[in-house]
Image 1: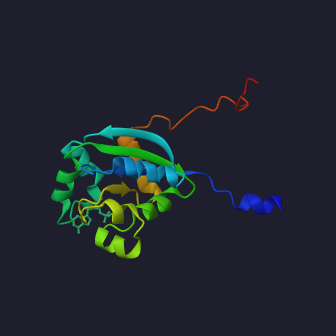
Image 2: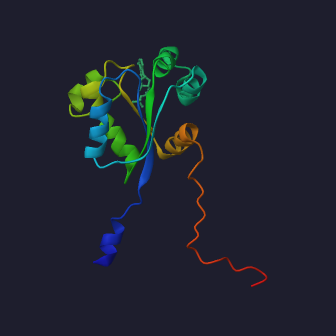
Image 3: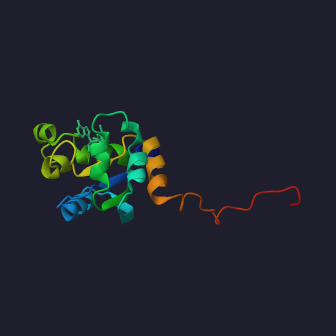
Length: 162
Ligand code: IDP
């Protein structure tokens, strides 16, 4: 019995979520984040510089919409969030819904993009697509603080002297 319970335990995971500029729905999005059981581990409002927006979306620099995307992302304050939950990366992607709100309204009508996105560019929210990107973008936005916390509760390491 005990073994069965342990096999269902997964450690919490972090993802980077962004409430993009110009959404009139920040409060409703924050409510939905809480209703879905994400822990908001970090939060800050930031206006990205062009350079930061270009770096943030560097994976898309060859896309035809890249300059529009950068314009949009630095037009006003973004709310940057680290969301923590079991399987947070995938769960936040599901909460957002598909990139294009027309598709979101068909396939995921309860999703944030179905409810709040204006169009495929101004689609209200961002979420990391995998855990590697999540770690990288969290560091980029929030820095390394909190990454290495010495565990003072651990027994001291045995050394040559001891
Ligand atoms: P995702 O945000 O759902 O992961 P990506 O394909 O990674 O979607 O695209 C990043 C962002 O670029 C989107 O969230 C959206 O703002 C913008 N974008 C994606 N596809 C298009 C498009 O076809 N036209 C204009 N903007 C787009």
